[in-house]
Amino acid sequence: MSYDVKTAGLWVEGVGTSVMWLALLLRAPCAVRSPQQRGLWIAVAAAAVTMTLKRHFLVASVDRDFHIYQAYVLATHLCGVLSAIIVMDFVLVTTDRAQREWLHLGSGLAVVCLIILGARSNPGMNVQQSHGVGSDVFWLIVIGIHEAGNILCIAVCLRHWRKGGKSPLRTTMGLFGLGSCLAALSWAGSVLQLVSGAFWVAPVLPFVMGVFCFSRAAVIAAPAFSAARRAHRDARDFWRLWGLWRDLVSAVPWVALAPPRPRLLELLLPRGPWSLLVYRQVIEIRDAILVLRDYASPDPPFPGPDPKVPSDPSAAYAAEMARWLAAARRAKNRGQGPRTRVVGLSALGGHDLVHETAFLVRVADAYCRAAPGGGADPSAHRFPTAIR
Image 1 (cartoon, rainbow, N blue to C red):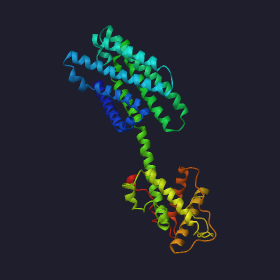
Image 2 (cartoon, rainbow, N blue to C red; image 1 turned 60 degrees about the vertical axis):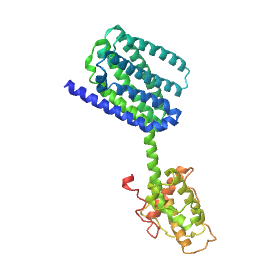
Image 3 (spheres, rainbow, N blue to C red; image 1 turned 90 degrees about the horizontal axis):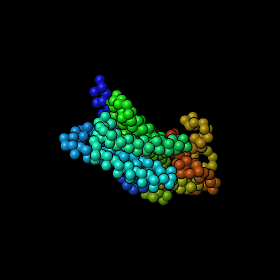
Image 4 (spheres, rainbow, N blue to C red; image 1 turned 180 degrees about the vertical axis):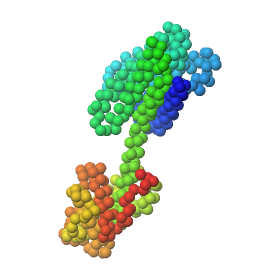
């Protein structure tokens, strides 16, 4: 039974290590360009290297020669200590503290002590393999550095998590703090083994470290998830605005930077980032509205409430603007000249680009739903299922 538990734990740890490497490769280009992300990326990379070096098949490939095995074990532990030191340095940089010099001095002395002790003793890959006073001191230094880094990270992450509100930063700090808690729990189990010989803890530790790897991978990949969510939102807004945008710029072609292409082609082979395409749509729709307001009739073209539109004022205003735009576009396309009484169709739908885009999306949806000649396919505002 214990063998099955140990095998399952090692499998979870291996999957977590692989996921952490995948997240590191995914974020490597951004980490190279961003000094703010580089320290965290290097710290997680060092942890990933340490977890990889601890894999049993790699340890088994070097344990035939004592000196090679001893150097391999020492390099593995030094890599883990380096990860903890980088994490502490990263935390001290973000909190603007002046103790970084003391950290560098103390960590340098600790690394020298570990090299000397590791060369004179045989600490092994885990606490169970520790033999002699030198190995015990080696492990106490290693565990002390890791626990100090974890406690510092937990304190800083907890403070930022409480102040973060509902934001991506709060989620990231929570995940990072969770990983530090799991690592601290793992090293506490190692201390328990070292002091009391409670070897029953050993089968549980791979599960803990596997979840630790998943949490670190989530921290590294969080910006990528946010970028993917923004890209999806921009693509969806572009798709929903396309029908209104196409009809308005076809009625007022001089406001368009370039003639519209087929919608699916615009989405799959965009002429720039989707966020810029949405910005262009909003600007060109607004320019077209400024022209078409001269062609709109002062009297409502479709009096009476629309049963398809919700009762809140913003939705009603969006539906009213959609009806005015449909009537003004048809009037211009029929060759009717500008009117003397101008309809106020240039009112903004919000105080910034985000709110303005959201309002125009509602106008576009109402425009596509308009029964009497909205000019677009009523189902055209639906985002493709394959792209959702």
